[in-house]
Length: 315
Image (cartoon, rainbow, N blue to C red; front, side, top):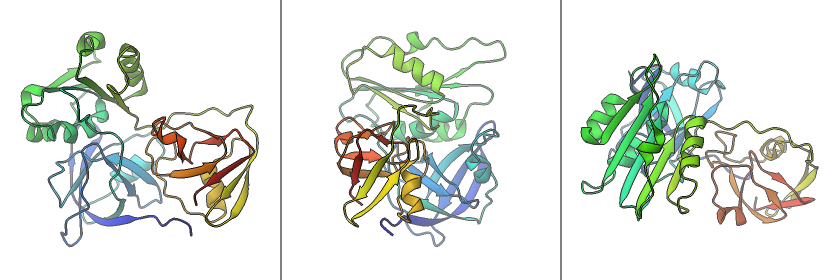
């Protein structure tokens, strides 16, 4: 075994409705010990009873050291994780990963604009709550039906900073261009929600300076097969083992087939759980996690390929 999966045992303490098909799940140590700390914007992986592992943003107060809170929307046509999560009941045991993530408030920002689409609100409650009282921010929630996490927002955020924009049933959609407005120094925009919303925000801010627009994906994008993909060899520098990887085959699956354990959760390149340092070769990056600088030394093995004949990993 090359890399042990680190989990913390938690117990479901409370479940409450938090919007249409959304549940707010409270997790705590079975003996009420403090849980590992987290930063606003972090997520944890839930190891669900049906064997699936899924990532969910922590949406509670980071000062609450004895509780993790996650909000999960039931997706009937999803990949099965949300349905398994919605079958949990108080008292059930759920192993979870240590908190991690790259989505965070910009330390140098002077104004924060959070744009959430539906369940995409989950990271923003904690992120907005950690801002000081003199830091200007606004949270805009675009939704259909009941507003998501309304009670949690009411408890954690100043009411005047949270704005709900309901669409559907004949209601017009919010004017994103007017909501975002022009760029000015110190202003940062954050977006999480459906791909159409995130793409629209990215398009409206395409001329903004680098580092001022932050987008968090929570659904792995579909990745079509590459007709030009070629086989390659992956070599593990620590164990001195080598394996062949077939064209368009998953590097993560190949490692698993040879009993090499690597942390993994979303398996779609959006959570960063399976990042591994690479030493030699020419990886092809398909993730939505790593920065350009990080890609010079790391690779997300669940979605990445290789353009060279050999890829050397630090495993």
